[in-house]
Amino acid sequence: MGMVRHDAYALLLQGNDVLTFINGLSTNRVEGACTTVFTNRSAKIVDVCEVVPVGEQIALIGYAPHKQSLVAHLTERILGQEVSITDISHLNDVFIGTGEGEFPEGTTHHNSRFGSMAIVPVRHEWQASWDQEAWTEHRIEHQIPFYAHEITQKVNPLKGGLGDLVHPQKGCYIGQEVLTRMRTRNSIDYVIRKKTNPVEKATTIGQHNSLVVERVQ
Image 1: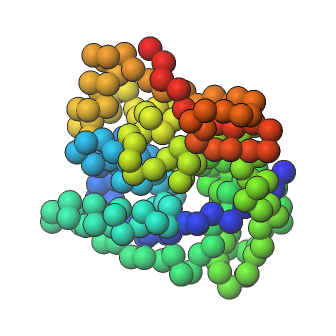
Image 2: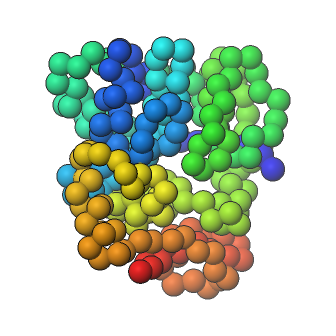
């Protein structure tokens, strides 16, 4: 059991319209802390983000290589709403795992779709207890999708194994029509499965087992 360093960014969103703004642009029903997906018009993933309330403000935690895409996606859609975006990545280290450990003062804890997340001020220089190999084996054992493996900007949330983050009763958002059509007209969904190596088309490869995303109807 442990925590691994997550290659993450942190954005601080401020303003009276923040939750409404995030809810209107992402796949999950956003009413507070949660994990949600921002998609483009083709329903491809822009980024998968953690919504973390910080007082009256909201922190968005996402995958660092996707930061510029997500910032551009959000900025061009503010359209006069009372929302501002500040990059606070340099102030925080982000860890994810099973939640065990002694965390320093000022740590923010969040229940992510991927595990227990800790957002730690960089001044503490807190160290991870897991390396990437340990995290990979944990993900495989528990069939957890993750960035740069199952989750990429080339797939939609369903193909990334994130169907549970696409709320079935959610109103209009960018990419919603495509995802709804996939589910209702074609009855298509995808599941992540753990299989013993060797595995064809594996998305995450471990020492003995791997993960693969398979289509189900």
